[in-house]
Each structure stands twice: as structure tokens, then as C-alpha cells.
Length: 134
Picture 1 (cartoon, rainbow, N blue to C red):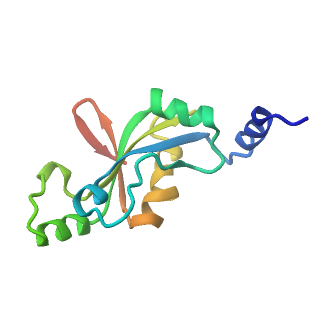
Picture 2 (cartoon, rainbow, N blue to C red):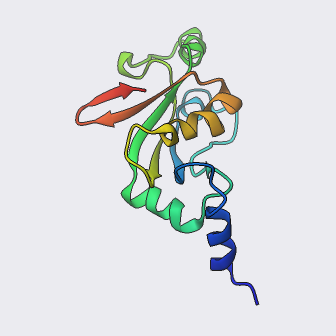
Picture 3 (cartoon, helix red, strand yellow):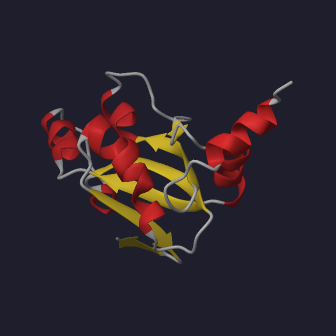
């Protein structure tokens, strides 16, 4: 008999590099425009296990993904105020990586979801009271 834990362990063993998992905690596009279903709770990548997603939620580092400002142009055109500290921010989330921060896995949310889903071009991580671009 094959258990879910065995299946998850096999999937985790298929990683090409450092395992990681991320979960979105904010969808600013949905907040500003409300034209699509919120992506809050979306998690990836597909081969991550439930244990890895839970670690992202509880032990993860904060990240955010940005576009080239399109999200704000639409909000400004609609007469909405845009916080200068949030210009370009589309999504925020939490990531857990098996490797040290700053590795290739830190680009995972951008490549897995931000670029293909919204056209995000940048990912930043929170360090103290500042956002740092990779």
C-alpha cells in the first residue's frame, strides 16, 4: 500500500535543485481592481509537499513580486490613490527554502507564478524594515 507521505517524499526527491515552497498572502491586483478572483492562498510549485507549504506559512520569509507599474497605472486612471511604497507590487507571500537565502530557489515564486500569471518582472525579499531586490 502506498501512503500519501510516500508519494510526497517521492515528489520531493524529484527536485532539480534546492526544494522550496511558497504561498501567496496578498493579491494587490484583486484589492485594487476586484476584476478577478483573489490569488491569496495560491501555492507552488506543484512538486512541493503539504509539509513544505506549511513550513512556508509558519517559518517562511516574506517576499513580494512587482510588475513594471501597469497595476498602478490602472488604479490611478480609476482615480484611486496609490501608496508610493507599493508602486508596482502585485503579489506578496511567504517562502520556505531548504537552502540558504539568496539561492536560485528564491526566484521560484517569480518564475513559477508571477511572470506567467501577471507579467511580474521583479521579486523582493524583506530584510529588517526594507525590501531588497534580487
